[in-house]
Image (cartoon, rainbow, N blue to C red; front, side, top):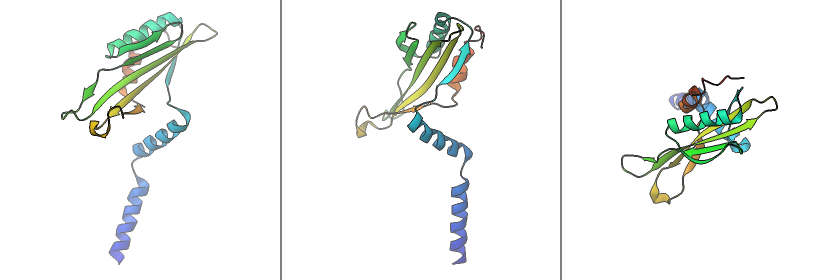
Length: 153
């Protein structure tokens, strides 16, 4: 009896402690369900066209194919190539969404969001992919590294 109680107590402690990164991911995922995905934002002391051109070249450098773009609209969307697992039972693809807005002082705010679309098993039905935003992903650092020529505000 004592060993059963000790085991249950130890299991409860492990369950409540958990992993900090897992708790952060769950909390961020729940928050995202209600508020929408969180874009990473930077403000540059440059005109809209200059920031747009750098964003477009950075997206293409990272391997994204541009699917929608417009300087006047401040929109740039793209998709990566489609990859699959070794048994060809699932696929994944990353997307980039860039939004640009000109501020009153002439600077440009850039907001970028990377997402990943995963379709695990084609037997469950084609087109049943799950889209998840990529938080704290190295793609953000790689994308913003190309903006070193523009002054940050």
